Image (cartoon, rainbow, N blue to C red; front, side, top):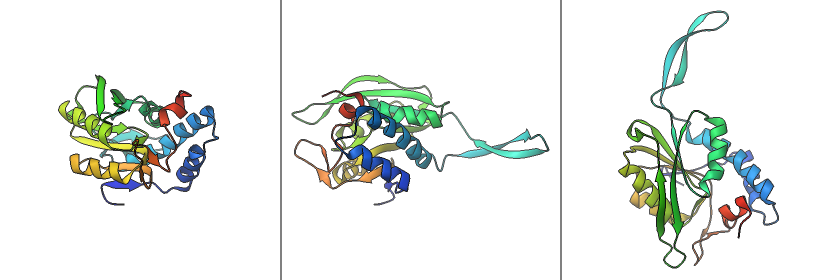
Length: 210
C-alpha cells in the first residue's frame, strides 16, 4: 500500500487468515490461528530492530556475534482483543515488557473511551509495538498511540491482523511517524464501523462471547 502500511503477503499468513475469516471456524481454532499468525507478523514488524555485537565463545572459537541493542521491547496490547496477538508475540519475544491500554468503543459515537492504562517504564528508550487485531475506524488506535506518546514513547509501530483503508488513512493523518504492519488491507468499513469483508468481531470470536 505505502511505506506507512506494510501488508504481509507470506503464504502461511494468508492461509491462516482465510481460515480465521470463515464464519464456521470454532473459537478454539480461531484462537490458535491468531496465536500462530501473530508470531509470523511479529517476525515482520521486528525485522529492522537495532543490533549490536558482543564477544562470545562457541565450543570451537571466540567470535563477535549479533545481539539486539538497547532496552527490551515493549509490547502494548489494546484491550481486550489485543491480547490474542500479544500471546503469540510473547512466544517469539519472551523477554519483552508488556503494557495495556483499555479502550472500548461507544456504539453510538464510535469514539473510544479509556478505562485502563498501564505501561512499562522508560518507553522513550524502547521500541514500542502496539497490537490490536482490527484497525477499522482507527479511532481507538489513534487514541491508544496518543496515550503512548504522552507516556514518552518515541519509536512506535502498530501491528494488526486486518486494516481498512479508512483506518489506515486516519492513522496516517494522526500519527504519520507510526508504521502499520497488517496481514490484509480489506475493502472498507460498514455503517457500524466493522471491516468488510473482515472476520466479524475479533474479541467475540477469540473469547466466545457475543
